[in-house]
Image (cartoon, rainbow, N blue to C red; front, side, top):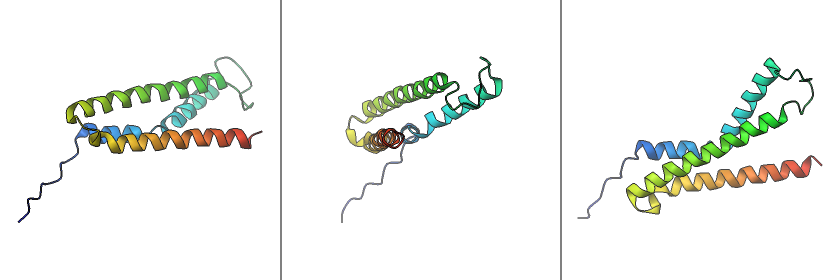
Length: 117
């Protein structure tokens, strides 16, 4: 008779790490659209908001800032998970999702740059 060890139930922190890793592309887009909507509605600098580049600096600043904050939070959560489990197997799936999200994001940016010439 063989011993079958039951599968470990994922912790909340593990689930949070997977969720955060999957938001690397979507979250900055959401933040950018929210900032755009607020600035277009309030128009604090009284610029022509019908132009495509109105408030571009602010929108990009908040979008890239949100990516930076999100990546720092992901690294902290993954470090905590790794320290608890002391094995890379504990963070393999969140790392894979994060890597795929980053690669897809970079490819989309490069292709957007090539097609908008």
